[in-house]
Every structure is written in structure tokens, then in C-alpha cells.
Image (cartoon, rainbow, N blue to C red):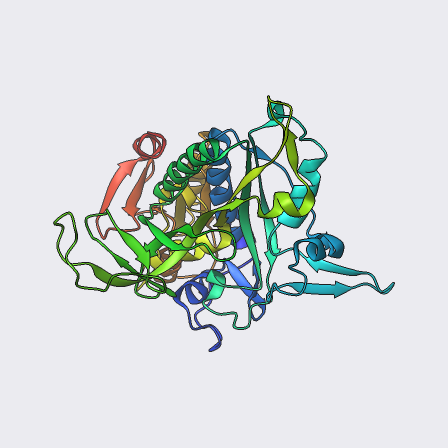
Length: 411
């Protein structure tokens, strides 16, 4: 991709309305632009990151046996009335058509999926069943803040599991914990499994929290990794000695990047979702719910992986593999094109800064702000057949051959 053709160039300043680090950096670097409070447009760079995170999520969900589908965002009012949530779900967007028909604009999808599953599940042979989607959600947040960490419109993965009994549910719940850990590890985030309130559905739930000084949540946790509770429901206080001898518990700010919880038969009962067991008797289907904010995860990555120069994207979610900077002169013009073609022919994703009339210093500053893991400089200084290699998270540079660069990028 030639940077000169890219929609969304870097800018130096952002609106004073943007207080969060993720919104400031993503706006300055050309990944997002705000539409209204709590709603953002994702430009080509931003969409590439969202797609890479989404693909990681898909791969890990598919490994658990889950099937992907896509459900309607415009939802049936009667289904929400049947569950009793039309009048109690505070963040529900309600829409009335010009024909006076009312709809819900989906913040979650139990009301859509459970009636749908009821059309296909009737016997114990149809279970278990695991279904997920990656879709835009809408919530009428009273205070949309923190950039893409908390918005009124956001991209989310929600998975729902359907089981014959509690044992089967528990086994899949544990499998999903491992799947979530794999997602966050691939995004280079250390997520802490944290006990939290189950709200109206169950006694407990679990959140995946990432430590950061700019987080909205707080947890009480053991640095040894054996205990964590959301501070709002914590039964212990900061400073208490860990029961396993890991020292005092700590209190820290965090970003919630995922949550999982039992639904039990809450929605099965509402819609009459049952199955005929081996004994011939009708039994309620037991459910679980597993949420992960894809756009929120993107914001969390920026909060954690950034410095005073810009973003430092982890390799697996970076918009491109390489940021190629061409220090222009007539002698290197053909060579820059050849390097670009050699890299892309090997499947390496390259953002080529080919701009005219822009200084080397400005190009380097933009590369740091955008945050692609590797910068390659094509210049007379490096010479024909060679490039200057620099990792985004290091100040060290080295002159290497293009073939050596390809080897390092593909192994």
C-alpha cells in the first residue's frame, strides 16, 4: 500500500473532547475518526487492525467447536417483552418506524438467538451447540467515554452455548477460559481472570482484566496469579496477605477486555427452549454467554502498547508487517519500487511511505506514531541492494540486504 494513496494521514492535534490515550493516538495516527460522542469511523488502517483481531478471535472460537453466524441488529420488540427486558434494559436503543412499529437496536442477542435455536433443537442429539458472531452492537450509554473502550456503537464477539446439563456446561466454560487466554496472548496482552458479580443471571461471572493506569475498572488481585476479584464485589481488601504465601494483595486499575457467565435457563425458560432427553422427558436447555469486545480490545492494546512517540502494535495485529520509508532521490527511485515488489511477492504486508516533499524526519515520526513493528528505510545511505532495519520498540538500526530482511520477516 502506498501511503500517498491511503485514506487517513497522520495529524498533529486532536479535539480537546478526546481525553483518552487510545482515542488521541488512533486519531492522530489515522486509524479512526469520531462521528459523534461514543461512535467512531474506522479508516483503512483501523479496519485492518479490527480484521486481524477478529480473525484471531474466529480461529480460537472455531477451535472450541463453535459455529459462526450473523444475527439481525434490528430486533423484535415482542421477544424483548417476553424476557421482561424491554422496560428494564437501561441501555437499550428503541426505534420506531414510520409505520409505528417498534424495534430494539441490538445491544446483545439472547432475544434473537434463543427463538432461532428453538427451531432446530428438539432432542438431546442436537446438543451441545455453540454459536457466535462478530457484529456491531448498540448501547445507549449515559456517558460515552474513553475513546473506543466504551462507546454507543462497537464491534463485539458474542458466543452462546447450549447444553444438556451443568457438567457439560462447566466443561465448555473451562474450554472458553483457555480460548480467551489464547486470544489475549496472541494480542500480547496479559489478561487476569477476575471473579465478578453475575448480575441478574447467576451468582458469579468472570471478567478478563488487563492492568493499565488508564483503566476504568479496579481489581484486587494477587501478583502470584491465584486470586482476583473486581473491586466492586471484592470480599477482601488491598494489603491482605495471599493465602498461598505470594505476599500482599494489590489494587490496580484495569480494562475489561472480555467476560463470560452462566445464563442457566433464564432465556430457555422465557422462550420454551427444551429438548427431549434419553428418558423421553422434556428438559430445559442450559446456556452460557461469552463476550469479547473486538474494538474495545483494539483500544486496550493501544493503551498498553504505546510510548511517547506513538503506538507500538504487537506483530499479529499490526495493520502492516513493514513500514517502508523511502528517502527520495532519483538514484533510489527504481530501487525502492523493486524492494516493495520483492517484499509483497513474499506475502509481506508493506506500507510504503512514497510521499513527495516530506522530510525524512517527518516520515520517521509518522512511522513511530503509526506503530508498525518494523521500519525499513530505502536510501542512498543504505545503498542499492540493502535497507536499514529498525524495530519500532528499539532505537538500534542495522544495514542488511533485502533478502536478509525477507528472511527475518518470514521466519
